Length: 311
Image 1 (tube, rainbow, N blue to C red):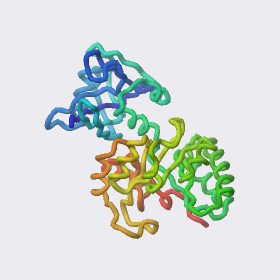
Image 2: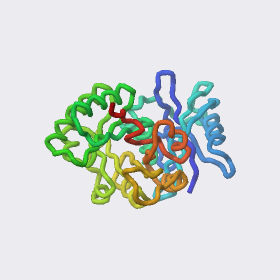
Image 3: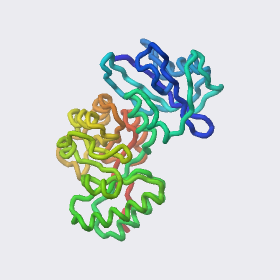
Image 4: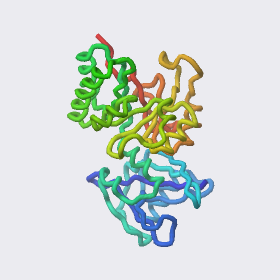
């Protein structure tokens, strides 16, 4: 597997830099995040600093790991190791004659890019927290709590209910969608693909439902997420085009009382095999973000760590 590093370089307005692959190279003509090969014995950070200076003439300061994408092309296999460049000096220009282009985040999905870069676009669009709701009891109280979560700045919410009658869930989801839209947040509904289609929101499929799907259940305009607990589910999620997954449990919780938790070591082993963004799940809260990212996660997901306590 070829270790490739790439950098997310932004200008003062937040646009992201892309470079066009030159004629004669694999995937020539496509646009990619700039970078190059990591030499044997070279750290990814050193390789990225070297490559971006050689290609763009910029000096990299601070950077943060975003995602690592293992990807198999017919011609070769790569590990695409992507970092957010948070500070740099110099004016980016194509030192090797390559074409450059600055694009807005929302424009990336419409650019012709290598398949391995697609999970990177999802990672760039996703927030560090994925908030899962508890089972709704009182609808008014549930919606007040949701409003508090949104007011706190959370941008990705999963409406999870296993017991509500469908008519009641549908009505609750409609109001939840309105609240999320007003806050600039995304809503996903657990399990109910038809309801997600009706409301034009995302869907989150449990692991058992995931394994029954043979294709992505929604169009590209809405998020599709899944729960995974092992390698087989992760591979199937990637194969059908799921945008992101939650993987766990990392720690033992009341909802996952049976079976051994993955722990951070087990989580890291599984996440390293998955070519898509992953949220760590299971007894986690916002202050676990550093440990989650060190283990290969994009962020953390949970209920109790993010949902307001009653009273």
